Image 1 (cartoon, chains in turn brown, red):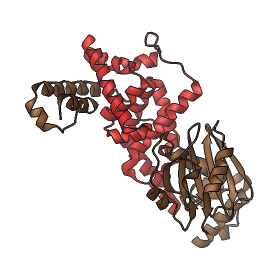
Image 2 (cartoon, rainbow over the protein chains, first blue to last red):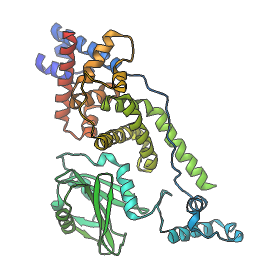
Image 3 (cartoon, chains in turn purple, yellow):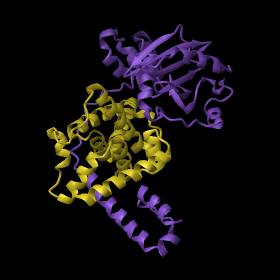
Image 4 (cartoon, each protein chain N blue to C red):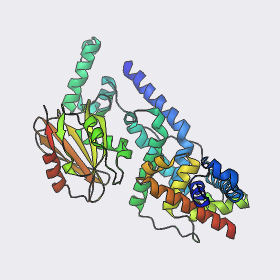
Length: 245
Length: 168
């Protein structure tokens, strides 16, 4: 390691502890290191501004039980007779599903309710912001195969540059969550082989637009930036995926 | 009963993570927006969003990066909504100026002003590295950059600050 290389390393990270051999022999770099570490201490102190007391906003209740569900939607629910409410736990669970069905509410594995599959997908995207990175680094084939195993679907890379793959819970099932790079930004693809829908469903959220397409006995959600043209993407995604079941 | 326990556990998990990382969230928001009032708004929105999507956080050891990513997105949303113009250093609002007038320490104030004036592209990786303790790999992931680009930005950021301090 020479002076230039050492200083380059120290300037990008003053805690760099490599290059000991060079450092022991070079007084100028010792001084440079000392200067950069002093600079960083000053930067650190300057950045550590006072923080106001934590004010947690009012957090919305996320219904996790029949009773909460009934309360939150009480305008639309006819109360069950008391006798039934006091019956066994399994019946309570069944009643919850019935109430949810009557309300058109989706109860998922986490216990959170969503009005629709589209709402659940948008909430999921909000919860996984790290997926939506603009990058030109593709995931490996090994990673893709791990997230989209052959017993779920066969998928090739023709849909676009796949930059993210994770197994995620949607509708109470673990499904492949992929991201490809579109013209306007990252595009989310959710492969839901068991989520049957009767026809295409449009969805839109904060600065995003998308569609859930029926595919065989399942569906595929494609969500991109608001001004992303999804029609071509839809075509290439549909061509690149084949359900195995 | 069972659901109440689950709700309580969820709330406790949220409070624990927010308790640990609230300061980081606020400081990150403040240095992204360069405005204390906006930072408070951004953190409030980020807390709400984190609460709604807490179940997406699979591993609490990733909570810091997860929360800061939410702050980053909320900050971007805020500026998209407001379409704020570039900050003019000679014409700061009270809450912008408040970020610079934290302590009666002249040397620190000079550095704070120099950081304030750095371009966003240089300031953000510096904050993530120096204040948040992120590795260059983590910064690259957070900002959607290649590691080489992060190294270049960190190098330039420090060079600019060093020059600025030498002049003052």
